[in-house]
Length: 94
Image 1: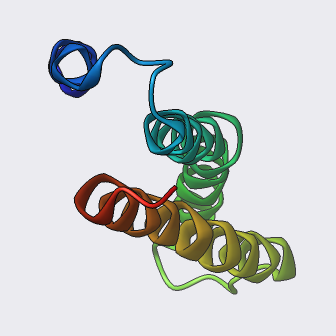
Image 2: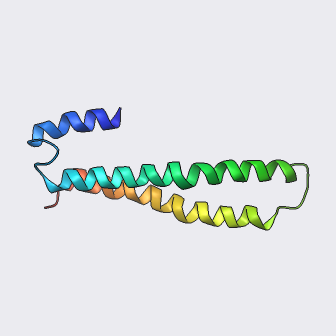
């Protein structure tokens, strides 16, 4: 839905290739999506599987905490990218 409406609105500014900020917005949006699909979703699945093992009071394995740190770092990046995208879409630099 976001991609379709974004492409339709880009036409109002001369097309998606007419303004550099549209390309930057696309890139930031795509980068966030790639991080989610390639890293964050698999990490969440691995953590959920590990959590089943210690759900009944077992010891939390070190691998769980390592994955948690990965999620925090890349989750932060995946959140900041759409915020940067919002800035680009509002202020239209370049």
